[in-house]
Length: 347
Image (cartoon, rainbow, N blue to C red; front, side, top):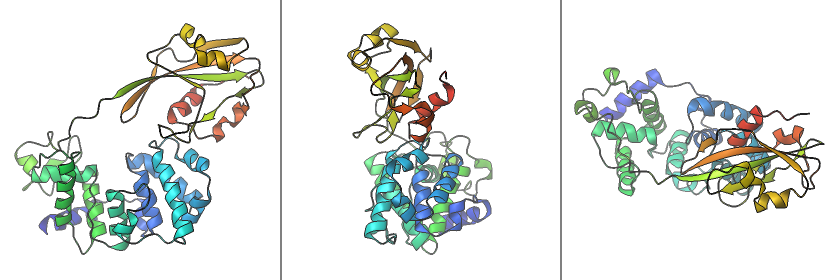
């Protein structure tokens, strides 16, 4: 009880003023939690405000088409979050009459919601004492109790969840959960934690044993895969291009991209124009030039994309049916969005 009391007292003095904290509406809490997974608050805040303005209710989100949702999500990454959010919004609107599930066991059944998000919504909105465990919580607990179990191991996930559950203040579980997350984000930070002013400095194992840099422990990551992308940025004489939607279960599902040639290694111009994909796409004479001399490295969780943009100018092209001025209407990966900001096609 001392741990939770100290934590809540710290939170009441230091908590961040965030718009979703002014509400117990599960729709708003759900939006904020999904958006802030793998995303810093500073980055996610503007997206949250834009989303709640455009889709003020779950019915508004459910009625939107997926392309619109993905376009508004552009830049947040991990686009499966947006697709799952949209899917579950339709389920809540159509099957549950817009009434959000009110228990952890029901909330976790929604697509895209795991233990952490279900715990956050259940505790904050419905006062259910179920503890959240995210990166911030792992860090606080591993340091305070001196736990060396890897946080990304099966045993570690179970151990930390069980420990957090024993600590939660059952009289105010939502406040406790927000307190421990904020404490990890603002005070017990990954680098340079504020140990000198920490309210737990007299009882923290990591501080006592000088282990703050060693904890928490993570198992080694999966080997990162290298991929080599060559986007063909088509520009016809009548200012048209080609964008296609990515389908399947790979990265960027539902987003749009320029024609892509993926290669085993970095490609030069000769290799690009002699490829079957290029020959099939361009039966007529073309002019090709490399936009970026140095490959752009786009890092995803388990793969790094080494990307080149090739500007291909041609008089006409049968499948080029999108006007350049309309490209901004399509949801695209941030990699392509950044290119479009830098690239100004000749009129």
